[in-house]
Image 1 (cartoon, rainbow, N blue to C red):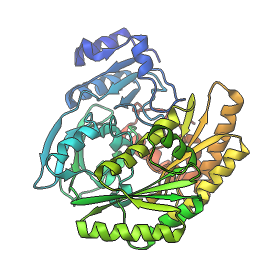
Image 2: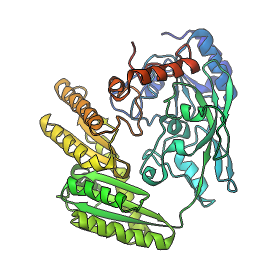
Image 3: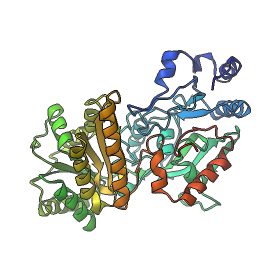
Image 4: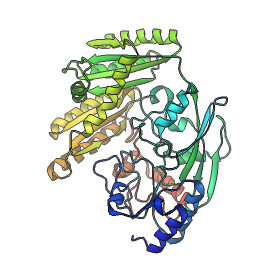
Length: 462
């Protein structure tokens, strides 16, 4: 569509002229996300600062039937905040206040533009802990994390965003402001509407603030690095640790390609022949951490690790986790286009999924790097390609298709934390029964009858 000057003038009246972008260069920036191949066409970008302004924007959009795509920091890896229908990009980055940290009831209330790392730093000063930690936490905002039900390495022990969401304030598609949920851990009052909005990828309502559950900061932690010459043995180690009753806070996996890139940037002394490495973090009471560390080391040795070592101190542990975070940077800097995929399989099928992915790399003559949250079976096969090379790009797409198909065959899911967005629409019908998809569409119609919020996402247009 083409937005009228009258509508743009009205937006300036609502949020102020300095909070409305219409320059072509600015619009280009807000027409993409963290993917390297999804592209939209924003017509205007607005930066509201409170729920009242968002309500006015949505009333305008409802009246003129203008598409609205909500955006936080744009770190999504599924095309979620890409404005494929044009219209308004509603960016919540200026709504960045931490409203209340309650150390007695272990809750925090914050606006959706708060960056997750800023929240973590504020909580650490009060010896509090918010576990979900997507690897984009240095930039990702709370609104985006809730909308995608983000997870991260801590999910294996502590769960994902939905497990900490107690309540939220949201603006509906018609401009009405609603307060949903509350600030108590238990709340069975009708349908759990905050949980329906969590993970809905911005298609149901515009979240303005959230109330989250907190935990006391763990007393102690220990990192363990295990090196394997076969992916199968690494997968076996994960399963054996999980079966032992030990629940590490994190279990992360990196394959040989990632290991090589890490050793180039931040040498850790890992053999370049290592087929895979696992990083474990144990946390809790000091005595328990010591005992669980010994158990994990022994189980990795029994599974066939060629080397296992506990970090000497906090500095070395920090280096290990910095290297893990650097893995994605290495991937995205290695090719013009990257399919940073996201599948989840039962933990005992991790080795099967990785082995299948390696076969696909050989079959289609591709480089596919694998990083994963191995503790919960969430793997990120990253296919390096170039959208300007038609043949190579087509082969990459075929490999991605087969990666998703394999995950479903192994009893898994097509997304663990990135969402469906634009990337995986064509696989939804394989992952969900037709009646279930109809239920999704019915929920969408109940919240957004005109289809104005983040149109074109999750399912393919019919």
